[in-house]
Amino acid sequence: MQSYTIGQAARLLGVSPDTARRWADAGRVTTHRDDSGRRLIDGRDLAAFSVELARTGGGEEAPSYTSVRNAFPGIVTAVKLGDVAAQVEIQAGPHRLVSLLTREAVEELGLEVGMEATARVKSTNVHIDRT
Image 1 (spheres, rainbow, N blue to C red):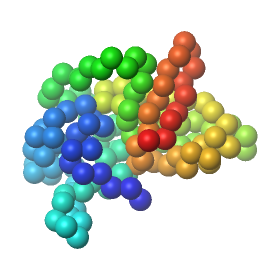
Image 2: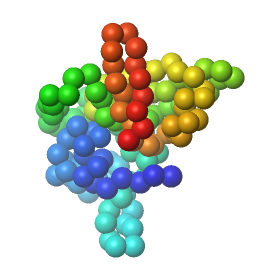
Image 3: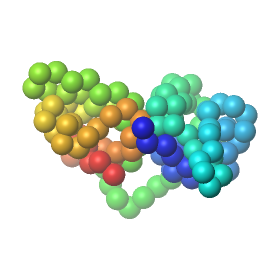
Image 4: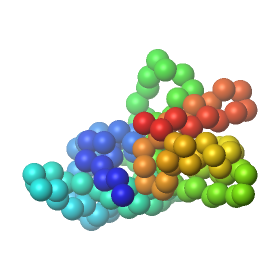
């Protein structure tokens, strides 16, 4: 399972690293240390925390802005596979994006809960890029 540094988690949650560090210090999200002493957050824990944060509106900072339009970097919070089709949910800061795509595409991208991904939106279609 992928783990994220405090800085990576902060970017995915749309907050500063200081805010993510305060949340970890307060026990709002569980961390562990790697062999070099860095604090890491398990991908599944970060996915659950991002959903809870969006549901409760617990962000402390305004979202960051970018010149890249319609790209939503975030964390995969759900993958539902059917025989042919699949549904993937991404929490990108306060935004929950849902994409319907083929099972084959999900398998080729290796998408699973807790991993980083980017949702790209054009018109009414949402495309998922693995990052």
